[in-house]
Figure 1 (tube, rainbow, N blue to C red):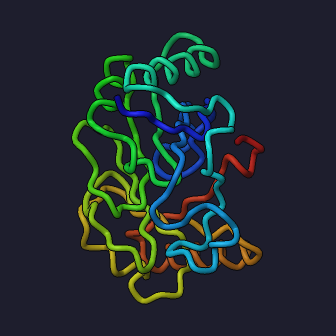
Figure 2 (tube, rainbow, N blue to C red):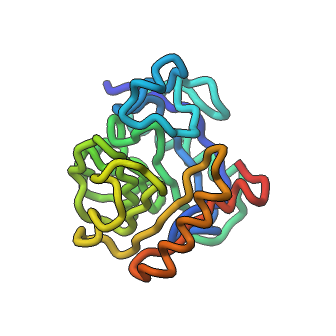
Length: 216
């Protein structure tokens, strides 16, 4: 039976993109295929600007879950503890890279528990069927295999030619977002992203509003 490794699971408001402001269980799977998550490896990583801790299973409501049903039961318990009745239960599968673990069995079990399912992926693995919302965040030097979905969210700026916004505009996504890179030059990055969106209205600015208002 498959073991699912979860860094953390908690209810908060989605802070980014088209679903901003919506309550959801953030189900953060451990592990990624573009960086080990260890600082000693950051400089050599394919993605070296990640701001998320996805190593291990020691976060809030984290752990190892034996089988898809155990995983879904856990997510439902996290949702039920934090949310009152009403509204569509929503889970956002994230990471790290969630598609290393999220499979048809887990999707079916979460659906049976009543969840609408979103995923935030780097796009290097094709998404399985059954997901309700697919957000792809491409990274330079990483082969993009998920070429369609609901939103494409590009961290901006990235220096590499293959990570420029115009490289993605022909892909089949409903929404295109630029998200300012969260580093020491964040103010400059935000201004640059806003300026780009004003000149290229296919793109919209996505801010990490959860950080602005103090949510996890």
